[in-house]
Image 1 (tube, helix red, strand yellow):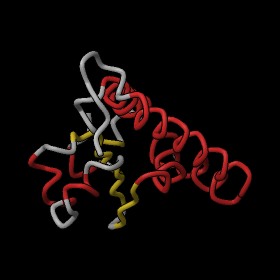
Image 2 (tube, rainbow, N blue to C red; image 1 turned 120 degrees about the vertical axis):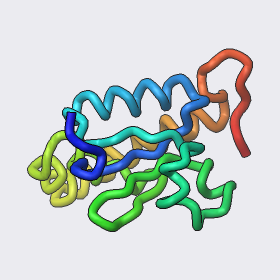
Image 3 (cartoon, rainbow, N blue to C red; image 1 turned 90 degrees about the vertical axis):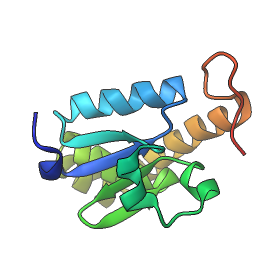
Length: 127
């Protein structure tokens, strides 16, 4: 497994949410650990997300890569590129219908989480 400093991206996710944790860990594995999944409340997240207000920090997933930070549905295309390689990232960026579809899928999952909770028993959506 590569050293954390050698990874191309860091995905910040809500580790209290079962589906979020599953997707984050799957992304880390599929990417061959080029993407490091890090809980939003982790000390390592403070260095990157420390400037965000708590409401914004916990409102969505975040992706940090190459000095940039994406949040919410904006992470979809860069996350695909970090996970599957730069060619996939370029294809998604250069194909507006594909990019819109990926963002739509992210938003659909996020809205479901907001209205129905995270899927773990006894949890409620964060405001």
